[in-house]
Image (cartoon, rainbow, N blue to C red; front, side, top):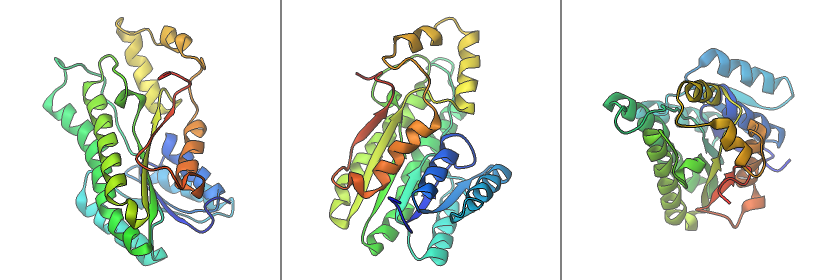
Length: 253
């Protein structure tokens, strides 16, 4: 029970990695607040967690909207009195290069992936300061560390996540707030399925060959990332802040 009775807020928790993170945090004793814009799916995941005997609540949150963040944080503080863990997981992906990316696609990706993380940290940090500290885990990507093909908006947004993470870590270390980022590679989610369909239609990237060249030659499961999230949210990582923690099967190595 690494997170017994800690209050954890997870964004993008209705499916994929976010749902897995919520389940693993709850399994370690956290009281989990799941947020998303996919209300039916989010409520279902929260109910599944409650059926295990854990404490889970679902709230609607569009991470791009400041008013949503303000309301969500206020509701969580009203219910639980504090927020100990923030997992900024919500994210989207558009697979396009510089020439084909529209202004609308760029804004959609960057507003969700980068602005959403910034707004989440901005909303939660004052609560954590009043509570004596906390742990923030932001979802970046191996693409924030290395280059790749055709992901210009996504790669830019995830690079920004690293910048936000480091800034928060350095600024609030003396307030007991730690901020770290996870950097997954390919993870078996609906988002990856969309990407693989795109790969099949474009000859510039051979996903199967790329996977074979990865040291651990399999696609990650959401649980692989969730275990790292639990580690970074817990006291096991109490001396780690401002870091980027790959979950990539050795890809960056």
